[in-house]
Length: 113
Image (cartoon, rainbow, N blue to C red; front, side, top):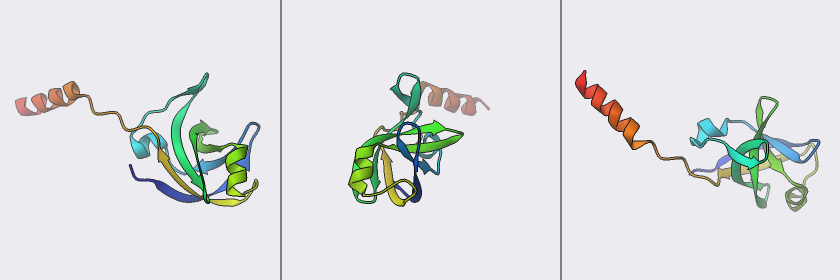
């Protein structure tokens, strides 16, 4: 799956730092959100902030999507809150295959018409 590249601003939150993700990951990659920890669903991803790479997640907050960056990744990238960062991100999961029985049914119904 192709990586997504963009620039964003590192923001501080009440738990971790995060960079806004400008897309809906489910629509972009065709991968539904999965449980990350109790009470939170999202997407596991591999991210590169400037030149630091790590595994993290994208979570929905405030009707937007956010790439979570822990303190270690922030330190490795050499950035502080408010800095603009180069982001390269790709999902760690793969899209679920289309249900064969559903596609077979739709093909059969098209033939009947």
